[in-house]
Picture (cartoon, rainbow, N blue to C red):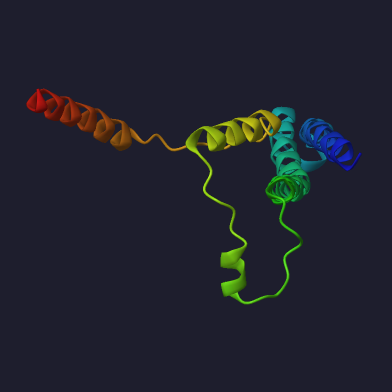
Length: 150
């Protein structure tokens, strides 16, 4: 239920930001004679003021929603790992609680499940061309060593 409310609030924030921007432009257009400016200039000033209000107001709430989404991901990962609630214990006892290494396939399935579940959170991923170049050179090197063994 909480997730539904947070997603609903996220949608309301988008609409509210658009209302601030359009309302600011309209208010600037209407108040242009009082400011002794042309109507288009008043609308531009109102648009800027509405954009500022939208970015401050809606941006603050959007930051809170983003933090909540990240905490949700961390909490779900904690629940899936099967660990109990963290306590203030020395680091040596935490080393004993580490789960055995998972296989690459299990990790890929887990990452794919998280990606599918939290797809609405867009995050830019850096393009790492150096790893693909080193992988292709490693493949060429292993091919040369395989030919050398024959």
